[in-house]
Amino acid sequence: MQETRFMFIKRALRQIYNDQPSDDSNITVNLVNNWLGDAIGAAAKKNYVENAQMDGVAYVNNSFYTTFSALPITSVDQFTYQMTLPQIPFALGNNEGVGVLQFVDPNGNISDPAIPLSENQVGYYRNLRPIPNKILYFSEGIFIYAISTLQLNNYTGKVRMVSGGDNTNLNSILNVPDDFKPIMIEYIKNQLAWERAQARINTNDGSDA
Amino acid sequence: MTADTAYQLTTYIANQFQRGNISSQRFNLIINQASTSFLNYLLGQFQTYNYGKPEARVQFGVNETARQRLTPLINPLSTLTIDVTGLAPYPTGFEQVDAMFTTTMDRIRFFPQHRLYSYLNDPIDPINTNPGYVLESGGFRFYPNTTYNGTQLPGAKLSYVQTPTPIVWAYTLDGQGRPVYNAGLSVGLPWYEVDCLEVISRALKMVGVNLGSMEISQYGDAIIKQGQ
Image (cartoon, rainbow over all chains, first blue to last red; front, top):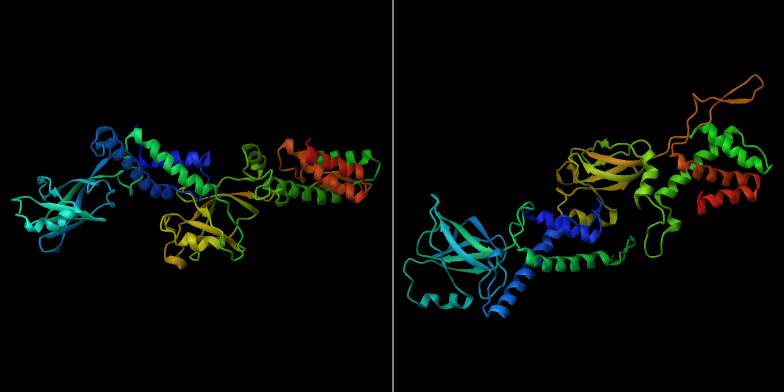
């Protein structure tokens, strides 16, 4: 059975509470879902480092990637178009958080993948001869920028990036391979067990509690 | 257990010590207080809290056995009607909240007043999708509500511990003016059979004080502290 985010979260809560959580429990599903992003990042990073150590090449396994479609494109500058990503890409290598960017027209036709630029390459690409018929892109925080002389407003973006899946949908599949879930579990357990183990001051006397 | 059995038992134990008699009116007075004391014990007494950990040795929900002892006082879910200010009066006989749900059986959390600000402004668990209530003298105050932010809960479902039904040893007077037990008008103990002696022993402690009898008090005390 495929594990959804909600199933993983319930698994974590069962461990933290050593039971089903009560209706007044403060470590909520949404809270664990928030921690999940960090935990997925820790697992992806571990995979990246392990691959570099064992194979001599740094990469993230395919299982960590998720495709997000229908990202709206807006023009923000001359020949520059902007899309908002579902999350800030993980800081893997120069720009390996985002693997592939393509464009889709209203009829469903898909472009060739655009060419990624690292942050330094963004600085000097304009001094180079343009690559014919190719679109360049780079990511910056939550945004991804495409550089093209073509009008991209009528297209939508399709991006393949390292991500645990859709964090707004708890019933979506958690896109992490099983062999890296123990890393997530350890991370979440450490954070939330620590939160739960803190001594609580329940007084309401104006003290900082 | 019927009121008469409890009365017979109470008077039998007290009379064994040749200290005096317990009238039916006095019995009705002390047995109900004893019933309330036992309820207090099952809900959790502050006096038995552990140091640094506010949990009583025995308290509501501590395990299935403690919960089961209270089940005669827990009715099926009640429906609460919430006004635009979020207020829903306590149901009749309300003693303590067991659980609170939305009409679709999602949870509604308890918010202490001094943490209400944090709950209302939590971006992780937004109040509109993660409702809660505070306890006030007039009833439950639910958040969100129309007055607070324009969002109204359609209602709530409550599981609660209710006040025990008063125990009554009812009687009619015979030709000599003596009380004769009236089973039809009497109300028995609302507890499970295994717990009835717990209630009676609490009543006996009061009898012991009233009669100045250490033996009766100690007998009641032994059952309360060491078990039956």
